Each structure stands twice: as structure tokens, then as C-alpha cells.
Length: 169
Ligand SMILES: [Ca+2]
Image 1 (cartoon, rainbow, N blue to C red):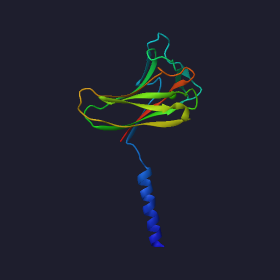
Image 2 (cartoon, rainbow, N blue to C red; image 1 turned 90 degrees about the vertical axis):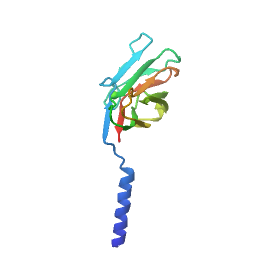
Image 3 (spheres, rainbow, N blue to C red; image 1 turned 135 degrees about the vertical axis):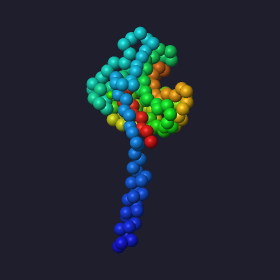
Image 4 (cartoon, rainbow, N blue to C red; image 1 turned 180 degrees about the vertical axis):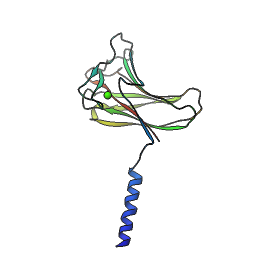
């Protein structure tokens, strides 16, 4: 009986170790808030706001534009420390409306970049992981941000811009 209890305790501790991935710090960047920016080269107003859904009750969205050269974009930035190595998990929040396009997030980490494809239509009120990235200290030019465009996407689909999160190990 005692052995069984001990065994159960060990199993429980192992479970907590494996499942309890916790981060030292989480920074959420809100659409429209600090470290958010948006722009356009089409001369229009950019990205309209919606209060119908969103992590904080609001979000932004535009239709895909169907072209490769005319676009609007939204960007979420993280303030990178200069003299410390950091490992960051990048996430975006996909709300339950106004997000139906299969998009490519442009992910910048340090001096490198990659793109991560996400079909926003597959997610409802969910944080979607864009990956874990290492940013070395003491580099002269480092940045961390996520950028999303509406170019080359069918205009029957909506490109949703809500919150992004940067989770530091
Ligand atoms: Ca929001």
C-alpha cells in the first residue's frame, strides 16, 4: 500500500513536471496598444476596428486583397533586451469572428526571420503557437516582432488581427 502511494506520488510529480511548462514572463501586445503598429500602401484608412469579438473584446480585420503589391499590415513588437540571451515563444490569438483567412505570419527574431502559416478559420478563441525562437545577447541590431499582411489572399476571407503574446523562458 505504501509503495503504491509512493508510486502515485512519483507519477503525479512527473506529470506536473511534463505538463507544467511555465514561462518566467508573458508580454501581451494588444492590437491598438503599446508596441502595436499598422500601415498601408493603398492610401485607405488601414485596418478597421471591431468590438464584436477579441481577446480583450476588440480586434481588427480586413479582407484579403487578392494582390501581391497592395496591402495593409499589422505588427506586434517585443522590446528585446540588449545584453541578455533570451528564448521567446511567439503566439497569436485568433478570436471567434472576423478571422477566416489562411495567412502567413512573418516572424522576426534577432537578425533572422521566418514565416509561419496559420489557417485562422481553424481556430476559435485560441492562442496559436508560432514557435520558440532564440535571440542572442550583445548583437548590434536585434528585433522581435510578428507582422501580418493581407496581400495575395482572396477577398472572400477576413484577415484577423488581435493580440500577440511573447513568452520568455
Ligand atoms: Ca484585441
